[in-house]
Image (tube, rainbow, N blue to C red; front, side, top):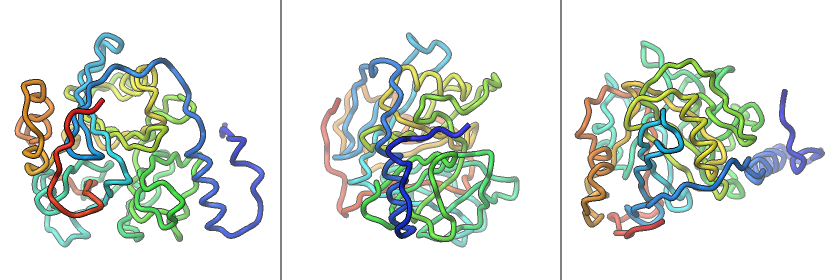
Length: 302
């Protein structure tokens, strides 16, 4: 049954764009469900607006392995969708090849795809559909780069509640996948017991985007439950493709800009991508600075 948000109802008349801005803006203002105190996490700054942490929730979530977490400020960083067909490539590049092609600071895998590498769900770049059709069972939609400056620059939308008109998209970049955890605290995946590597994109109440990569295999249901109960700053989250497609990598320039310490070894190894085999990925999401220049050292942050 649909949930209603009082601030967002009763709006009638006016232009379509105004209605859409109000609907999305009200959804962004809805308070997240609270399930406990935020965990103590040490964040290492990679560059202003981009930080990383390796969080081990084993004490509270015994079935969930360590989580590589990237915290991104959309005011400083833009997100762009890339699909190999759209870029005229004969086959899907690995994530490291994608990083070199895009010259992005960070690249992570998008959603699911068919055997012929066509995307399962909505996929938009520069305001145009890349051919994916709306998947009516999967309600998560990562969006970025709004046409209306009043909207947040990046969001995790829940298509069960949030509008996304395909003929006039409010965001230029979009990738659909599975809704994992919604703003009411409801888990949106069933407990199948299946364990796999996972990539998750979350949105915090204050507007930052959090990209999560599991170090080991985990069930989506257990991961969603852990995030809801132990990381209440994440307002809602969606799961991208998992298994061997779950991948994230950072540019060598970004990593070299950060002063090394022994405590960084694990997350550095994961972000270089040298600790695993990579398969070709048909679609990825790239994170790049809104202003040019090489990475600046950000120092440690909490």
